[in-house]
Length: 265
Image (cartoon, rainbow, N blue to C red; front, side, top):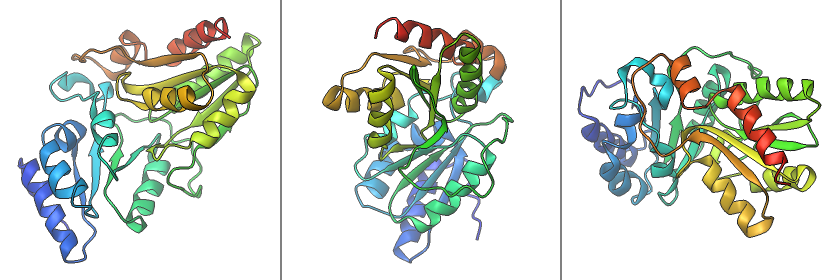
C-alpha cells in the first residue's frame, strides 16, 4: 500500500514507526535532506531508540542533487545515521544495486537507512548479484593502492583505476555499499597487501565512510589514507558534473589522491 503524507516528513516517520507495531514493513521516501536532517529527532526517538522496523529510503543525496542548491543537498546524512545505535546504513552505486538492497532490507529486521542519488549513472552491477548487508564487493584486484568507494563514486573509482593502470599503478577497487555494519575484514585484508588506501564518497569527509575506515585502520593497522570527499563545506547550485568537478569528487580527484597516498607509504 502507498500513503501520500505530503510535505510533513516528521509525521511520515511517526506514521511509519506506528505501522511497524501492526506488523507492517514501512519504507519511507523523500529527499535525503528531508529524510534525515529535518526529522532527526523523530528518527532517533521513534525509530532507532524504539528499534522499529522502518526502512528510511532517501533519494537526491549529496551534491548531485544539483541545481536545487545547498538547502536541498545534504552532505552530513551518513554521519547522522551511522551514529544512531542499531541503524543499518546503505549507500548504493547504481539501479541494480539499489533494487537488490531494497529487497534485502525487506527481509532484514531493524531500522535502516538506504541512500541513493538523483542523476542517471551507469548501471554496471549485475542484475542478479546477491546483496549481502555488511559485505563489501571486490571490483578490481590490485597491488599498489586500495580504493574504497561508495555510491556514485564507485563508478568514478573504476574509471580512476583504468587511468592509474596506464600510469603503471595497480589499484584495488572495493565497493562498500554498507557503511554500517562496515566490512572491516575486507578493508584490512586489502591494505595488508597494498599498504595505502584512498576512500571516495559524495559526503562530507567528517562523519562519512572515510572516517569509519580511518577508525578501523587506527585500531588494527595504521595505514596512509587520503580522503576524496567534500572538505567541510556546504554545496551550491550547479549541474552535477560542475559540482563534482569543483568539489573534487570525480575520477581525476581519485587519481590525484592515489598519487599522493603512494608517496606516503
